[in-house]
Length: 98
Image (cartoon, one colour):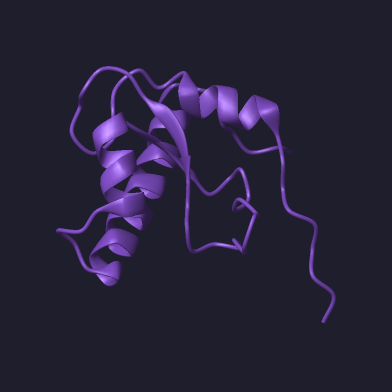
């Protein structure tokens, strides 16, 4: 099976960064944090659509946190991605193409 190219879209990342508050804690100021488990390899970031609007603290905790297990960090990121998608829809930045 041929591997699909990694999805890159600066407009998607800008939309994620436009979410002003962390989707996990509500803190002001976010980063577009890429998932560590969706299509990532050594030296490669995951698809841009697998990103979440996170504060610096949650971004660090998910990427490098020592207080959470790998499974807990993955579950937290998955939840953050879903919450980001919901927020993008609520803001009118994502819709269905007809």
